[in-house]
Image: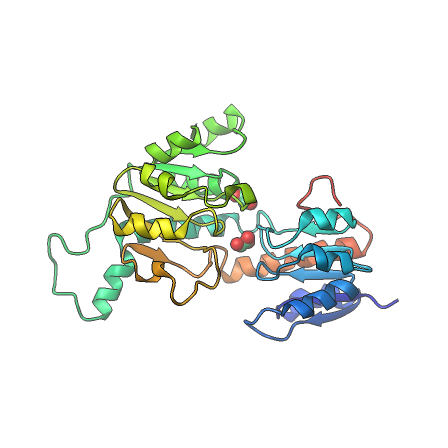
Length: 325
Ligand code: GLV
Ligand code: GLV
């Protein structure tokens, strides 16, 4: 029977070519509007493979309707948009695109950290608004980055790549993970393991890089945010929902935190009336951690490669479950 391969957004033809020799490729035609739920339901029911983005929620109901689905290849390192447990029950592979975006995302984390601490967007906005009066001792002053203590919540591949960059800024690295890394790995970074409370209390800059999990929902609540050092900086670069954004607004407005930088939000795109949009000391980016020409191409190729492998009878390269479905 004809094999249908559903691709949820337009991608370069050259990237899709390997799929075209394996079946009928259906590409959702809109550039920026994600396929609505009915389209995904239909695709899950009929397709043999799906290439999805983080904006496509693939839930248990969709997966239950799948008749011949063998793989859901997410074009992202994160995959909390997919009900992986439901896929596992139906014997469907779920894959992500690790490694290819690690360095690119770490670059963006440093850019966001630098922008938030040195207030680059605020300074640039002022200049464009013709507000720059000339050099002045205390205009546009931010915080030193070098020599500060950087706390990483979620020391995975991206965290290690951030730590490597931060060492070049003479930063001291702390981290907290659910599971501590082997000591040899810690020494190699080098980074010091601390419990969650110490990470919160001791970091000058705290970067959230943990993948989303329900138990992390609002882990950074009002109490935790007020538990950070006065004048500290919070960077959020993995997923929204881990930080209570209403509490963050309060803590920034109160001046307890000096600044925050966010590339991810609990609701994306950020709602137009979101209070964060009016907070001067917050730097807000539209989820662009992996957004370079080179890396987005590699991510698309990697997702396609996972599909090709499964449709030609091999295990995928990047199953999110080590044990497979
Ligand atoms: C983007 O957020 C990703 O998970 O790759
Ligand atoms: C993401 O995959 C990470 O390992 O940090």
